[in-house]
Image (tube, rainbow, N blue to C red; front, side):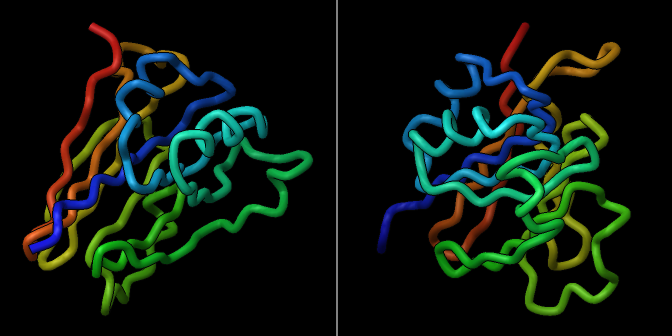
Length: 154
């Protein structure tokens, strides 16, 4: 049996790459950013850790950012993952999708809806109101897909 694959899930960084986020993502085989990056330097910092898949959020524009897709689908470790910034833009038909990763709300969420695991890693950027500063880790292996939220600040 092959070892489990760890995928880092991050969103809503809004120009801020916290050292705590980089430490939490260390050792991930892949990183998915669900939008609201704001500046390409965020992507450069994350890409030093692992291969990076990114979608554009509602606050994203400018050089290198404009060319990012609004949504994407990738397959890692046999799991098919759909990524889009806003959950309102998730298609109704999720046939063949195992995991949906979104951002936008800054509210962390791990919830199974039927056969699909929905994950919002929350916001790893500047704190918004009283919401926590978090990211997520998706683990794929042994025929299972699990996700957990990782708090970055106390």
